[in-house]
Image 1 (tube, rainbow, N blue to C red):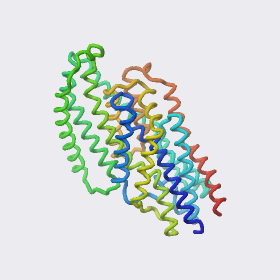
Image 2: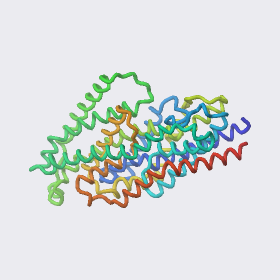
Image 3: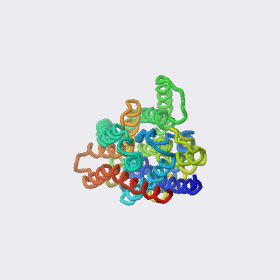
Image 4: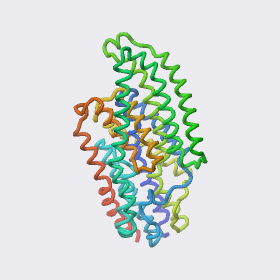
Length: 415
């Protein structure tokens, strides 16, 4: 190709821009409840998330990626390799711009849906409506309802159980020490499943369902035993307990929030980094081979670029979405934050096994809503919720419109 070097450099720049958007928006979802509940500071959240997101992206990001994410576009309709290159560039630029706008306003949107919307725009503009797999798009639209409802339901039930069996008991601290290991076991097992189903999916581990469940049970048991030992060492501050009856209990839940957030960040880094570097890998592959294939190799330098972009986005603008998730929807404490994270992990595991089209972003927002509903509708800021839902609905069409416009621009420039 005449402009091969220029196109690759442009793809690298736009890929970094897109992964910056992933870090600024999506990563904050994993740490928002921990920050909002006061379990950790924003600075610590950025450091922790950066470590685990980068580790997930680099260590478990995989060696290949789908050339066109989520099967949205039928590659057989691509008339020439350069058309797909222009499409990938336009998708990266469109998705990166929308994520930047959403992050500026603190809207937690789905990066997967953003890149899917951008691909739809390229598909319609460059290949025609027949090239778009509209059935896949229907599943994504369904996830707008399925994801938050499942997350809210699990979080609501968990929050009620903590309220009923711990906070409303005669001795909340004694109940927390007694039942804490049970919650820790559930958390450890679920986090192991999330890691195996989502975090290590690209490593092609040949594990049967029985082996996977066995590993989860072992991890849950080990974590529970460690947790039980730590719970017995938590000191109760008599002064703090007089001022706030549940201060000691909340001290128990605080480290649990951090543990679940770390695992969710690892799983997110391993999966969603492909939203930014997948199109980049496709451009590099097409330019080097001159052919369009269903999968593109993921060189290690591209994984490093993706991980670095995520960290950059999180550290520069991630606090805005963290603030929305952690403080603006409803007031969170460590126990409520733990319930929200555990509910999100439960929903991810269930959806992975049933093949449900869900979004992690929508799940965690629904989970925060669920713990708020457990205290009554009055505890939720409905204006914030309305703004978030609106941003979800417009993500696909805005991504599509921007991508279509950029496709015509790139095609005009390079042809």
